[in-house]
Length: 259
Picture 1 (tube, rainbow, N blue to C red):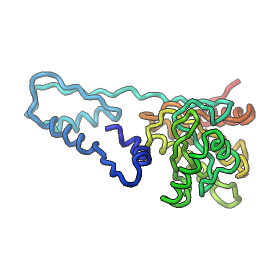
Picture 2: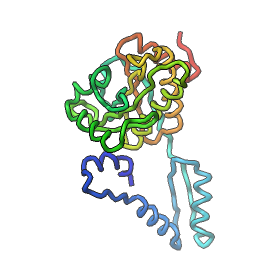
Picture 3: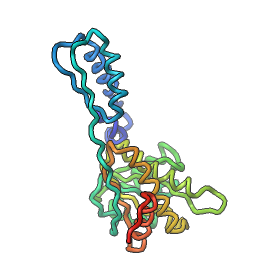
Picture 4: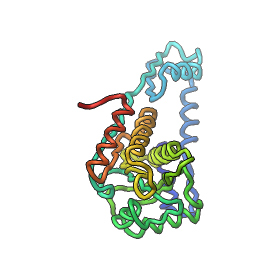
C-alpha cells in the first residue's frame, strides 16, 4: 500500500511500455470488507495518524451495533517531528534521499546549482531531464520534475523553477510555490530527507535575506502539516553568510530569537 509514494519512480524505471497497477484501492476495499464481518470476542485496536475521535466514530459506524460487545480502541500514532536544519556545505554531497535543483523551465543544467548537480551526478541527469520535458513540456511554477541523482549520494533530484525576481510580480508567492512543489514531490516519491538550496537568490536576482526568509517560512509551515513522510529538511548554504540568513528566517518563522 505504500508503493503509490514511489509510483513515478517505478514508472520511470519500467518504461512507457509497462502499465503500473496501483494495488492500494483493492487493499482498502478488502480492509473494509474484513472490518464489516461479524466480530469475534476480543478487542480491536486500530492506529491512525489522523484524528482518533473522528476515526473511531467512522469505525464504529462501519462495524455496526452487531459487533458489540467487542471493544474498539482507536489510538493516535505519534506524529514524527520534522527536523529542519541549516547546514553549510555542498548540496551535491548531502546524504539525503532527494536534493532540490534550482532549475530553469527547460531543465537545462548549464550553470549554478543545476550545473553543479550535473557535474556531480553525471550526464544521466540531463538525459532524464530532457526526457521529462519531452513528455510534460516546460516546467511550470509550483510544479516539480523528478529524476534520478546519478552518481550523487541522493537517490533523486527534484527540479523546481524558482522565480526570476521581477518588480511588479508576486515574487514571494512564486518562491513559496516552488518550495511547496519540491516538498510535495518529496512526499510523493517517499523521500524521508531532502536538501534544499537558497532558490532564486543567485543569478535569478532574489535578494538573499528575503529569499531565505520565504524559503524557511514555507518549509516550516509545510512540514508542520506533513509529518508522515519527510522527517529531515536540510537548508543547504554555500557559505556562513547564507547560513546565517537561513537561521534568521527559521527564527522568524518559529517566532524565536537567539542571543
